[in-house]
Every structure is written in C-alpha cells, then in structure tokens.
Amino acid sequence: MKKWMSYLLVSVAMMTGLLGCSADIDDYHQTQPRFDLFEYFQGTSTAWGMVQDYTHQQTRRFEVDIVGTIEGNTLTLVEDFIFDDGEKSQRIWTIKRLGDGQYEGQADDIIGVAKGREVGNALQWQYDFELKMEDSSVVVTFDDWLYRQDEQHIFNLTKIKKFGLEVGRITLFFQKQ
Image 1 (tube, rainbow, N blue to C red):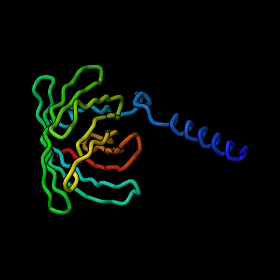
Image 2: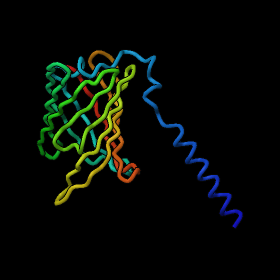
Image 3: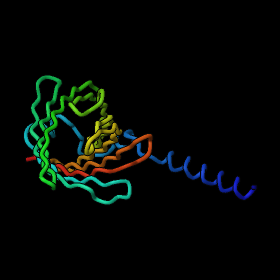
Image 4: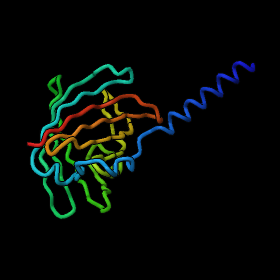
C-alpha cells in the first residue's frame, strides 16, 4: 500500500509540474516582429496545414486561401478551404479589435465568442468549435498559438481538447501574398 501511495504522490507531483510549465502569452513581450493581427491579414494570404489525431497520426491535409478586409475596428476574414480528399468549405470570421492587444471573434462554426490576445510576436486565440463528423458533431475547444516569423510568415500550432484532454492537433503555416 505504501508503494502504491508513493507512486501516486510522484505522479501527482509530476503532473502538477507539467501543468505549471505551460506557455503564457505574457512570456512574449520582448519578441519581434510584433504580431499585429489586422496588419498581417489585411489583403490576401495562403495557408497550408494538417490535422493530427490524439496519437499524432496525420488524418487530413488542407490549403486555405484567405482574404482579409478591415472596416474600422473589425477585420473580416474569408477563408476558403480545400482538403486533400477534395472537400471544400468556407469560414468567415468577424474579428473585433478591443484594444490593448485583445480581440473577440465570431464565425458560423464557432460556439459563442472566440477570445484572443497578442503580445510581442505571439497571438493566443481560444474558442469552442463544432467539429462535424460523419453523421454527427461534437464541440471541442481550440487553443491556437500563432507566431509571427517575419513580414510574410506565421506559424500556427493548435491543441484540440475535449473534457480538458488533448484529442488532436493542427499545424498551419501562413504566407502573406
């Protein structure tokens, strides 16, 4: 019994340590170039990405053509997706700049309001998403981390979670046209 309790305590300590090591958007204050969501996505850009399941096996690949327009404090992104199996879809984001690097956004397949914050060269974007599956759908949480590499490139790493557990990942690369 003591051995089992010892293993349990070590496991809890390790998990607590791992959870305490997660990235924080405030860690990026000194990084360059500055992210600037509206500046980067105004005009046209293209993205390439992949989806991985919980085992990290690639399950889908896709390309996205993006057109961004700004009117006042609102950025509208029209994203046209083409998947490796031929499926096509479109998502239209309406993103409001709130000030102090904070944003709120909405799209048809987003549940509620997405919240984002940019600091330095990073943007963390979080929202619930209705993931459509063959004959049903499930709501998952997206935790997007976008990193501005230079004037033309952004890397995007997304954890997809259900009940707090990671069930998938998306890796995406953007290139401004």
